[in-house]
Image (cartoon, rainbow, N blue to C red; front, side):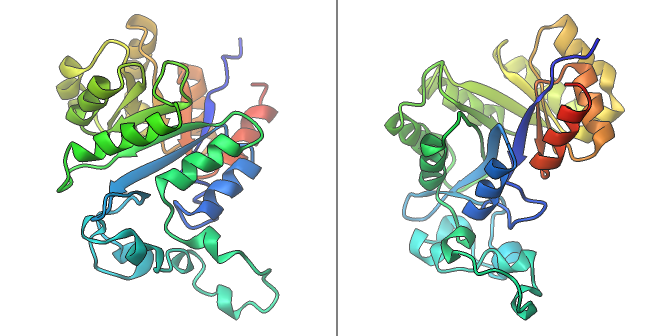
Length: 266
């Protein structure tokens, strides 16, 4: 019997082919059929939530500046997409692109994109820790979601973190939102589990799922816990997740994963 197909979640957008966390990456993911979009959020010095993974801009903009010490205007002036295609300017035949698609993206703009899209799309938002702003990140996140009316049980949003403290803050501020506890290994899961609500979603990385499929199977079949997995790019890993009953796969290649699932009888 073929098990239900997992939801296809675009990891930082279609990040295998576009610069991560840019509007261009998310538009490409949507065009490729992604059912949900994953993003990391950090708080700027002037209080804006931006979609940035790293603590600093060194990797994506060749700047050592720390995100939390920069204002939004400074971040928006950076080129955060050229690193992905360093030889693009030498290609005379490449099509012109909208420069707005390659800038640092605010979470507000991403929420607007999802709200205005022609079909339902969900969001998986990860708050990054540790950070100098601690719980202010979750507070600002919930305040922004409230502006969109997205804090109820029917909200197309779930909040993820490697910090169970961060998830506890979100539960206190928005009790109806789904929460995902991200873990890299068994030890992290067993340490966090006593502090989690029974309805919290487990979020293991694909390495953990490969190494300990029985643990994942017990989570789902014995304890009734929902499981979302990151980052799932290879067809064999997609099939493993589906066979185990994992509910969502977060992937750099949402189009390829979606086509694989559609072509394998899902």
